Image (cartoon, rainbow, N blue to C red; front, side, top):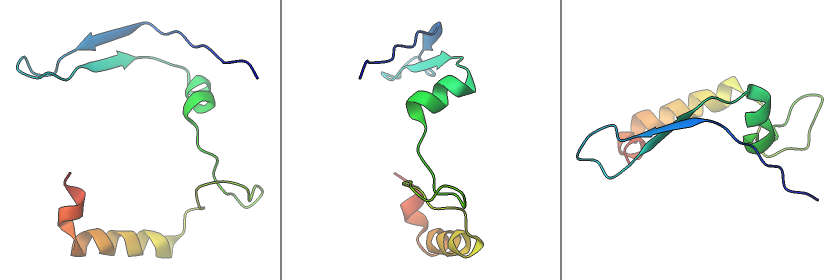
Length: 75
């Protein structure tokens, strides 16, 4: 299988002058991003994927977890 190649015009900058980290800004079509960064999701009509369909009860459980463990939000 061949390797796909995408090229974009980008702008690199440092958000703070003292920072050693750079930020890279570029514009890409949503279809391009989906092809190289998309994650398969389970859906009602497609059950073979890595992520689960959205469930209200799961969202509530996750929110409760982070409310009870706020230190997990900071890295």
